[in-house]
Structures are given as C-alpha cells and as structure tokens.
Amino acid sequence: MSARLEDAGDRLIIWNGNTDKRGALSPELYACILQACEMASERRIRAIILTAEGPFFCAGGDLNVLINRQGMAEDERRAGIEGLHDVIRAMRACPVPIIAAIEGGAAGAGLSFALACDIVVAAQGAKFVAAYVKAGLVPDGGLTAHLARTVPRQLSMEMCMLAQPVLAERMHALGVVNALTEVGGAMDVARGFADRFAAGPRDAQAAIRKMVAAAYDVTEAEQLDHERDAMGFATGAPEAAEGIAAFLEKRSPNYG
Image 1 (cartoon, rainbow, N blue to C red):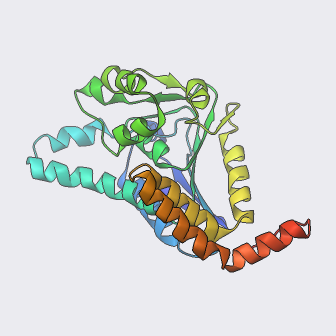
Image 2 (cartoon, one colour):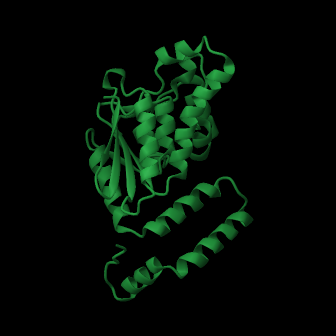
C-alpha cells in the first residue's frame, strides 16, 4: 500500500508507504493528505501527523514518473506539478497543526512536505536533502520558499545547488526541527505534541497558526491589524472565558 489514513479520534495519522522506493511520492499519498486536511474541519480533529511506515520518511518524486513526463508538453508537466502544489496549499490552509514524524530522512519533495508542516520531529541522523540538482532538476513543492523562511541563504544555496545533506542535528540547532529523538522515537514524540494540541483551545490554535503563517508575507503594520482583529474576537470567545477562569482558579482548563 502506497499510503493510508488512520483516524485516531482526536487526530489523523497519514502513513506514507511505498517502502520499496523509500517512501517516494504517490497519488495515494496525495489523496490521503488532501482527505486529512478536509476532515480536519471536524471539531473533534485537533492535529494531523504525517509519517512513514518504512525507515525513510519520503524520498521525493519517483524518477520513473518524471522520465515519463519528459515526453509531455510543458503545459502538461506544469499541470502535474500543480497537483503537488495543491497538496502543499491544502497543508498550509489546514485548520489544525500538522506534525511531521521523520525517521531516516526527507529528500526532494519529501523535504517540501516536511517543511510545510508546523512541527517537525526527527530522529538522530535523519538526513534532509534537496536532491533535485542531482537529476538536473530544480526544487518544487514550495521548498525554496520554506527554506528561505527557516535557514540562512548560504545554507539554502548549498542544499539546493549541491544537494548537500543536512543532518537532523544541525536542523535542530537551527530551529527547523522542533524535537530530536533517538532512532525509532519520532512517532512517540509526535504523538506527545498531538496530545498537547488536543488539550488546548482549538479555535485559538487555528487563529495563531493562520497569523504566524501570514506574518512572513505582510508588513508589520498589516500584521498588527491581523493581531488586533484576532485578539478582539478571541477575548470574547468561550475559549478565553474558560482559559482565564482556569488560570485565576489555578486549575487546568477544559476546552472540550
């Protein structure tokens, strides 16, 4: 099976399969991610975990598929890339946080998927590789945009132009990886993050996720307006009433 979606109650888990190809992209993976992002509108869903069944998170595009695209017209090739970009857009627009649990590494568009997530958990020694240039290709899936927001320009150039692998340890030091785990431990830590999101205020978390994403693309003045509007709404919402009461009463909040 190339991919499957597990409904775990307050969270959805996307399991990337295709293990004989190190978790290379597949239509089934795209479909599972899109379905999960759509299901995330249900209030019971508080987080999505993206991980792999095999020892490698995702090796990116299947070169055999890309070879077949060489005979297509350029417009057809662009349409194929848009399929990937629609998945990335759905991830970024998702109302709940997406957590990547990475064992082994993430390469090419697999790295794009990892960086499109809100929280990244990686096992020690996992490699992050923008491998496109090795095949005479260029990054897609928003990779250059995400790298520009997370790593220095020089490192982005080294990764994209030389396909230089960067270990999870360095990505953790740069703040790109939120948690570094022992090999085999990424999923357990990812579940812990999902537990924390499940216990928090869903609407406030969704608003914060949207605000943080927007902050990279707008001016400070525009972001101040976004924060004003979001805070003005949040202050009068039921989550704030419960959260403030719990703080004053020195108890844990119950956001339901």
